[in-house]
Image 1 (cartoon, rainbow, N blue to C red):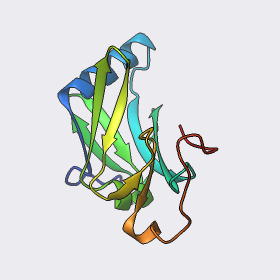
Image 2: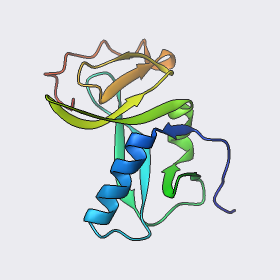
Image 3: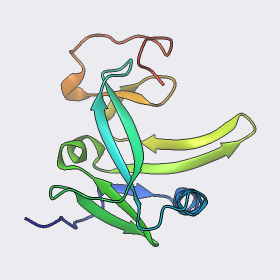
Length: 133
């Protein structure tokens, strides 16, 4: 089975793409791309993750945004479909932000979320809850 290239599961804004390119260049990570994924945990049940990787799996969905390779594994794709990754830079600090239309609630810190199918599973805590952030 080969790596799947399909419609964009996530969208990367031009600002985020430029920031990713800058980080890859600063860290001398030639041939790397950004992996966006979802894992269990966080104060709302699921949490976002991002990492630079140079290898992709057979079940990855691979997208290209103006030279920035973005990889999403098949399990995460069901939670991230239609999401947008942006980079926000303001006086209070900067960072990547994920806007996810599948999230029915999220933690105030923006790193943790629930989908409708996980709504019944526990109430989650505030941003002070262990695992949030």
